[in-house]
Structures are given as C-alpha cells and as structure tokens.
Image 1: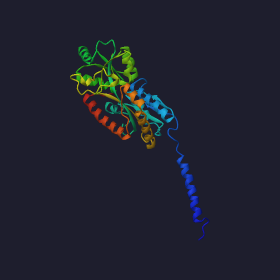
Image 2: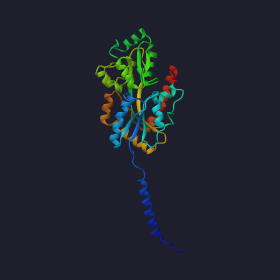
Image 3: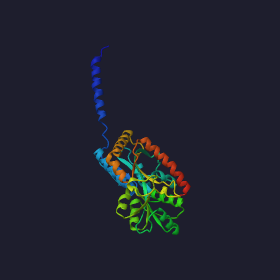
Length: 329
C-alpha cells in the first residue's frame, strides 16, 4: 500500500503541528492577575481589618504590578461582605480580606450566608493582632484594677465600644466581664471605625481597640492604654501589662487575626501565586518592622496551615460562645 507521505515526512509534520499547538496552548492563559483585583473587606473603613487590608493591598499592587483595590462592604458583623465575596467569580480577581469574625459568626448567628470551610479557599494568614484595652482620658482610671473597681461601683453604667455584636472587641469585653465579675455595657457599632469615633468622643469611654489602631491614639494622648489582651507583652506597648498578668485574670486572652481567602473553585495556581507573594511580602524586613511597631505578630505560612488555623479557631470559639450564651438574632 502506498502512502501520500513517507513516515519521516509524517513525523516532521506531526512534530511541527504539536509544537504549534503547544506554543499556542502555553500562551492561551493570560498571566495572573488580568486586571484590577477587588479585595473585599467586610467592615467599614478605619477599623483594624480595613487598616491591615490596605497595608497588604498596597504591597500586592507593587508585587504584581496590577491594582489590588480595597472594597469596604460592612454590615452584620462581616456577614454581608463575606457573602458578596463568596459569590464572586472564582478567577482570582475577587478576594476576601477578613478576620476572626469569619470563624465566630457561625456560632453567634442562627444562620450565616457562607460555609467557613466550603465557601472559600484559604490563601494565606497575614498576622495576629491582639487588642489593647484603652479608655477615654476623661474616665478616672489608670489601670485595669481601677476600671474593674469603677465598673463594680457602677454596674451597667460604663459602656465599652465594639465593632458589632460578636466582634472580637465585643467578645474581649464579655470575657473580662465574666472573669472579673463586672457588668460593663457593650455598645455595638457598625465596625471599628465608627466605634473608635465614639470612643474618641467619650460616647463609649472604653474599648478593646485593635493593636494596629492603638499606637497613634495612645502616643498622641487621645486615649489611655491600660493593658494588652495577648498572653505576652507587645514591643509596641512595652509599658502595658497583659490582662492575664493581673491577679484573678490568669488565662485571659483574646486576639484578632487577618487573612486572605478566595471564592471556592479559584484555580490552584492562582492561590499558590498569591500565597507565595504574600509570604514573601510578610517576610521582608520592612514588613517585619512595620508589624512589630503596630503591635502585630506575623503569621504568614502555607495554605494548609491557614486551613488548619480556621478549623482550630472554629472549634475554640464555638465552645467559648456556647459557654457564654452569646447569640445574635
């Protein structure tokens, strides 16, 4: 039987054709990101999560050469913005930058519009952010013991600002109420920004303020720092004791965390690229010094570590919240 092409010619044609296809396929996918990336922060501007998100967004913009734009979608203690992010196109152009409310809300609400395990892919933790117990300068207290004494003398008359029911500042205050046997009154606001505004106005004279927002306010005398909520002292607040070091309050600890997630179904290569860039950014000397000065502890690691952190936090806070009886309708 005769063939129109010899075996050698056919081999050459197939080789050239496969090379053409391979070249076309290797360049068919555009490099990530293809345009501006929308980093949804499910809280109003000015709070701890927003501040940390803007720091990272700036660095990601510099690293990728494409804009990472913060979108504040506050409301329902982060549930509204989180739902918006969960419904985003899973192509890496929509991301969620959030904090501890992501794992506490499922235990506080009867129903949340997302599944903390299934609705998102973990990208990377950024940092751990303890709170700082601060008071308005007009409040006649100089330390935690003074605040406890005043609260016992005036039950339900000393208000503490929180960035919404079930927020980290709220739970930190409730934990102190329980452990110190006092009754400070929680006053919820729509995010840390509005809560800080109320604190500075003296409307709510006490707040468990995210460390990232506390340094400037304390150094300028706009608020008085009493103690930190971490188990160890922070370099940024070296003169402030830990609440857990005060007699009767051993074991007290409450901290925020900041991290990036992507809608479920986002390509693995995109997730890995983002994780690599974020880890590199957080390991830089510049960011290490900045986080230290802001009272934050860098927690960047691989995606599996973040997934384990989320599961551990879900387990921890579900028990704490159940024991406290706290709920949000």
